[in-house]
Amino acid sequence: MKRRAFFAAAVAGAAAIEAACQVPATPANATPAVLPDFELDELSLATLSDGLKQGKWTSSRLVELYLARIDAVDRNGPKLNSVLVLNPDAEAIARALDAERANGHVRGPLHGIPILVKDNIETRDPLATTAGSLALADWRSGQDAFVAARLRAAGAIILGKTNLSEWANFRSTHSSSGWSGRGGQTRNPYALDRSPSGSSSGSGAGASASLCAAAIGTETDGSVTSPSSINGICGIKPTVGLVSRAGIVPISVSQDTAGPMARTVEDLAILLGAMTGVDSADSATASSQGYQDYTRFLDPNGLRGARLGIARKFFENNTPLDSFLSRCVVALKKAGAEVIDPADLATHGQIDAPEQEVLYYEFKDGINRYLARLPASSPARTLDQLIAFNEKNRDREMPFFGQELFLQSQARGPLTDPAYSKARADCVRLAREQGIDALLANQKLDAIVTLTSGPAWLIDHVNGDRDTGGCTTPAAVAGYPHITVPAGFYGGLPIGLSFFGAAWSEPTLIRFAFAWEQQMKARRKPGFIASTAG
Image 1 (cartoon, helix red, strand yellow):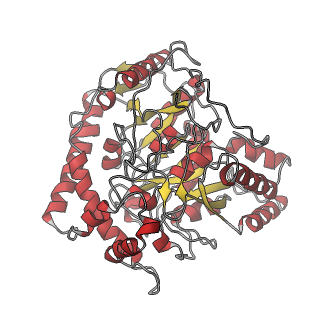
Image 2 (cartoon, rainbow, N blue to C red; image 1 turned 45 degrees about the vertical axis):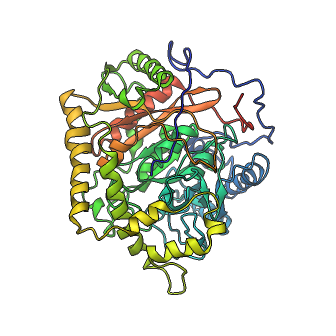
Image 3 (cartoon, rainbow, N blue to C red; image 1 turned 120 degrees about the vertical axis):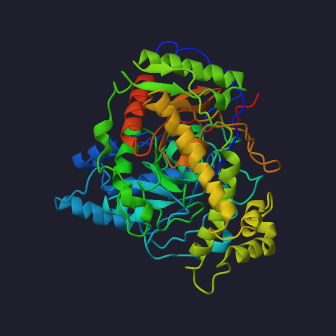
């Protein structure tokens, strides 16, 4: 759910391409944290895989190093608070994968690589799946979500689960991204007083801080792409149906999806290939048009000849961010793209209201189905019981914000209600037929481009997130793919560039994002400074 704030920021100068976005100096009072050297800092999946192949590390050693990093950065030092719980079986899993490698069996580029997953994704490890809620603190499914099973089969080690905006940020209209009753507040690794965005807050902050090789998040509207942008990493929200939702705590059957979050586009491509597949437990995957290897689409010259439309209206009332976008347009042209500027959706601003209505209905239906699986001893097996649990435990569950979205959802009827059918039909029409599909066809575009967000806002438990814009809604409501990649900084805070397009266009978007990344090289590792304010 989109609970983000993007406020004004000035942008300057040239970076890897002349006249593109540059990292301005951080404020004089912004001193980076002094941390122990970390030999895995910023290393990609490919580098780690090569190191394992060459005997530089074992998987057991990688687990040991990442656990020490989590202790130094997440539990102590800057105290990001991004990792909710560690997997007690991780070391044993690593030893087993090391034995496989020693016997000549290597499953692929993820073999023996430690990753983190968001705590709304079920795993068969002895870990609860809580969506950040105390109501689910004892819920252990004993089985992998489809996406977890796919990653495990590819050899990935699930190191632990990340903190998140509780219930994937579908509980309150005044929430603070990255806060959950079970995990407290996650912090941004670039400035500790800034929000990590959400709801995949811990996955974004943890991957950015090199607490893992990469991470998995989930998105309904902005929950992969926004925290990726704001934590200075790359993220993909796939086409709905490319990745199964089975075993993931739901919000919306029409919009939910899991997606990879990593420091490079290549890492996204590796992870996405491992995550895709048809699953009989999720009918949306029946028409999946996925690939086992998305790295084939990594082309450093992939922007040459691309026809891209620039969606200006998302930031038209924010002059500094519009200026930032203009500098990105210059860079796109220099990389060989043909740019149509502006190229705005005819339905811009019309999607929010029907989307909200759809989410109310679908959340009630989906969460009731999900909670019904829990044991009879569980404190909440319906949305109504969940609301009651939160009221009873208000001091722990609702110290800062309430559950207005839960109450609105509970007031809705079944999915057979005419009001739901109309709202969903409006969403399809406005986001697809008269929205993304129409713009791509009318302007003969390969993709639509704009900023994902502005820089991170101050954490505010009194007023909640400052929400002043963002581009995630059209692709989210349409169920279409969206990729974000670092574009530059303002005052030490990252800003991402978004590419979104038609259903199943992940290969095209990956090609564009990789070419942008290779020429801009805008990713900078975080400094864990106390504040960029002043």
